[in-house]
Image (cartoon, rainbow, N blue to C red; front, top):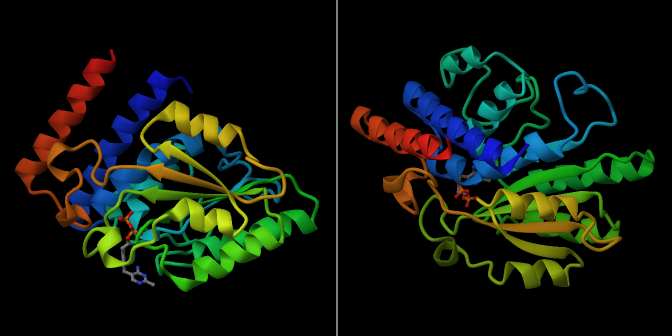
Length: 275
Ligand SMILES: Cc1ncc(C[n+]2csc(CCOP(=O)(O)OP(=O)(O)O)c2C)c(N)n1
């Protein structure tokens, strides 16, 4: 996709994230808006995954470790044709499979996540499986920066370099906020790059809202042969809606009718500016 097409997609995705969170009266708004450009580039430019090949052992794997931001994932999966968008009208409703975290009951979801700290370990397992089976697929996982202190991540990081998993790419949505405050105040993991490098990973920093930087980083995999890849994507929580940006209260939060209208107006203005 061209830069302009990706930009337009992201506006569309942001509007849908807000629409379904507003409709469900629940959801993780800020973190879905911070990671949506990353998912956009992954699903529209990088991943060899589609409804047609989803059962193929050769498909790429995407595991969303920060599962609470499922609205971003659902909106992209429906756009890629895994299920009709109208299914999302049941988001968080009684008996719906479209619950507040990813479940494999939804077509296109690779792994159940939501209890933080599991996606990287699951991805390491998948990347080892690719090696053992002589397969060329790649494994991508999206982590939150607030999720990083979970101890399982560091066991998985060690294992990934031990097995030289250069077919694995972890992306950290580094929006610097988590559920209860600034990530660095709740549990500081800085310097993330040096920590992962010391664990044997190759690391790149990108602006997580810059499509070209994201594309270039993914295209340059493996960053160093034999090393697992880490992309630290610098993002803004609530990106795209002025009053939500970098605001803790929008970790989860449902806009009022007026707030919802304001957000749509801002996003529509961006869309107009693209034409
Ligand atoms: C094991 C576990 N502990 C606690 C939670 C509750 N929880 C949900 S979201 C969240 C904060 C996550 O922060 P971050 O990873 O930075 O996500 P983002 O800011 O990108 O939304 C926490 C602690 C959880 N889902 N799983």
